[in-house]
Image 1: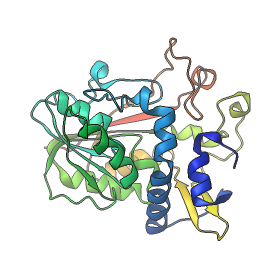
Image 2: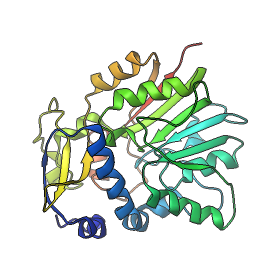
Image 3: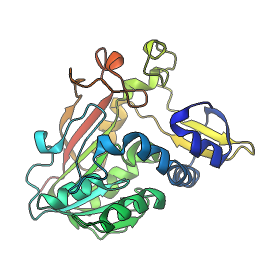
Length: 282
């Protein structure tokens, strides 16, 4: 437990052990709410500039490969559209959507992350409603949104991601689009290391047992869940959504920075991100 990227959160939560274990939705939600509250400062110290958290109008970066919504337009036309961002963190994406004509609402499980976004908005710029909520139980009526998105937000951190897909389908209007980015499922088989040690497969791809960090009393302090590519597709289809496209971004030649396990070394060899583009049929 010597990862300097998350030293503050690990110290605050007393993280002392890691392993694999089955974790239910409530336990996972409580652990990750505490984790992101505790890690908010370190996370922004490391990533805020890259994500444009403090820029005047926000930024919408989909992934560590630096894919920007302003370039790729995965959400399509956003002007005048009611948009839900699931797992918005400090809301740079939602603020960017507002600055470009959308009508976004952001939700996140962590008040620590939301508070960072609210502090940014207090200084001016686009204003976005932010709500503390669980992605497995969206606090919105049916047919409330034209679009929904998640850029590495809630999906990897919920126990029941199939329920998230159903919830998003429920709150989308017919014809609505749902686009979400997650760590690429094949990344699960490699150690969380951006260097040469992260190039050797050590974990079975088909082992869905969550990665769990615990404190000295055995209480989970962080939980991350794995789904195979097939799992993701089946969850999308079972929710009544149509998978229109799957994007696996290349690592750009100009990008020489590391982000956790993402690095130029690994990015040159295999994908780090999977972005699913889905539609709710009319």
